[in-house]
Image 1 (cartoon, protein in one colour):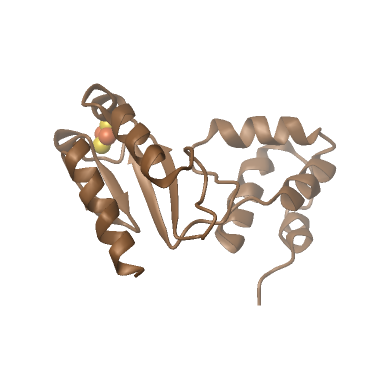
Image 2: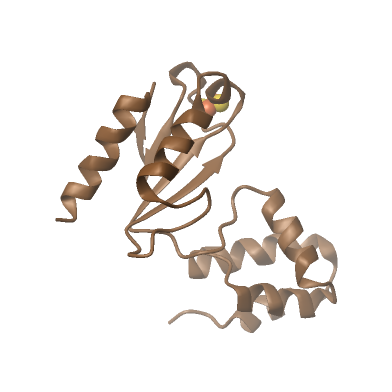
Length: 154
Ligand code: FES
């Protein structure tokens, strides 16, 4: 059974701001994302506005604010991948799936999240789908990769 958000928050006995990121991490590890309710609970705990909590959480690319899709695409936007055209790849993914970075398709099949260096710079640009890596991705390949997962759903 999933832990209640308050149970997670109350494990951290004081509202020292050093606990903010660990609390957000534990909520995301438990629920898979940071819901609006969880942000409200965290903001009450720290006596900070929700906008401040969002501001801090969005600074870290590890946090997502919607449930992940069945196929979660991570797109590296580190320096090497950026130079190798990761922005164009992201735009193509957004165009095909009709979602923006950080969003999940309405059918819950795909989600996309851009992240910092994924540790494979010599193979840039790099993406992963549910942990499976694809390297030196170009605009033709990204269409094929997405088509592959779309076909699995038919
Ligand atoms: S910058 Fe993309 S893998 Fe390092």
